[in-house]
Image (cartoon, rainbow, N blue to C red; front, side, top):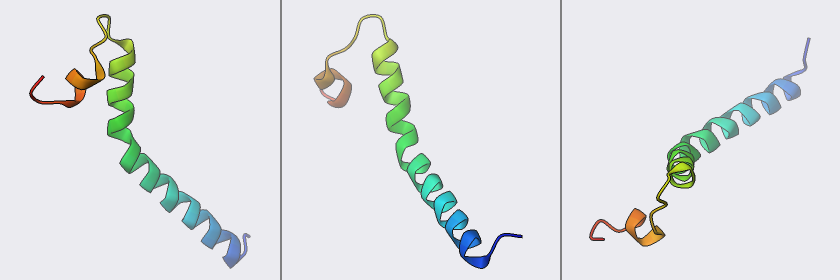
Length: 51
């Protein structure tokens, strides 16, 4: 049976993992779409709504 300290560490690691996944999911999808597209758009066209 794991100790209380081990349970707390596992909980902290899981919470950190959820936070990282939460904030990195959309940038990851954009990055994958940008690198896999055949005519790669310029970064300005990708970011700017006016371009």
